[in-house]
Image 1 (cartoon, rainbow, N blue to C red):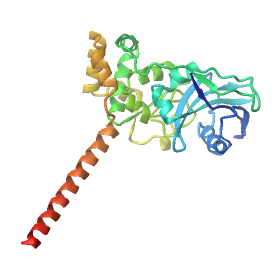
Image 2: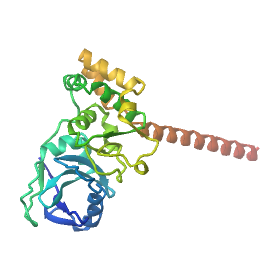
Image 3: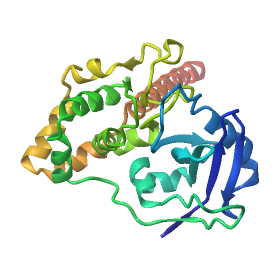
Image 4: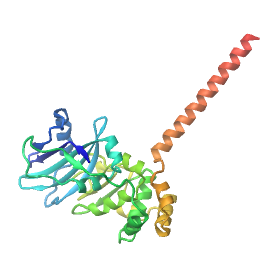
Length: 283
């Protein structure tokens, strides 16, 4: 069982962030940055409610915040879990599964909140679980979206309320390394945090650049190798292929590898040239 620092905040209608409760392990130095983070969730549009949303964001140099957001009597409540990046990866980098495993103790007050107990979570889904997700009515949308994200794009959905099941299903389909690099929100009042996959009640053009594809564009995204092989693994119950797909390098991993290979080749070329010059001088 992993113990995780947690805190409860209330974002009031005037934009003030009020601390309701926190565990002893929650570092006081984190407070200003976390207050900025919850404010960046955005200003509530008129008539929009938030029964429960989940989002994740990198926090400092070595932490990830997994946050549950829901309406409270006097404002918007934020239940935050501050995992180390290593613990986040070990839990499958799946914020929706992490949040589901840790209930929010909204009645807690002050420093009496204990550290959250996070049970061991499965890092990778089975072919049966993937098949169940792909058979949902939104299966084609999820397949198009996962290929788009793997290719380096981002996605935005306009919905009047949170779409937790949609985003949780999407995260099941992603390779583990992609999960560690991409940041989702099943609902947010704005995109100030620049999520990679986000559901919003309305689109503000200034918050979404060319990288973001609409729901229609995602559903009709050109079929790629990753989604085709994912479907094949699910249809044939090929657990080996599925594991290979889910443990593959991410797009940025591949770019980094290419950079270091190129740098290595350049260094070897320079070294070979220097050796040749020295040999000529010695003759």
